[in-house]
Length: 107
Image (cartoon, rainbow, N blue to C red; front, side, top):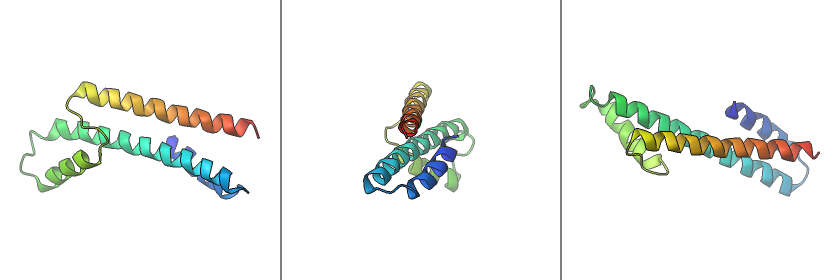
């Protein structure tokens, strides 16, 4: 759903007249995409932790681990941390979507 909102709002930004409005729209989009990306990385890290025991010598899985460790904004050591990080990212995404709705209701 959030990706659809990003696409719609990006189209909306191209129709805005002022630079300030375009900048505001692009800031919302950038932040929303950041949280979507972080949620994907957290989910991938969680899935990786579940399959790592069976694929110790797999080159692709080892590369994925390195990429996930470098791109995650905070290291994840346990399942509870992963769930908490997902919850926070979802709340932040929800707040951004609510701000987008509020900004468009005023128009």
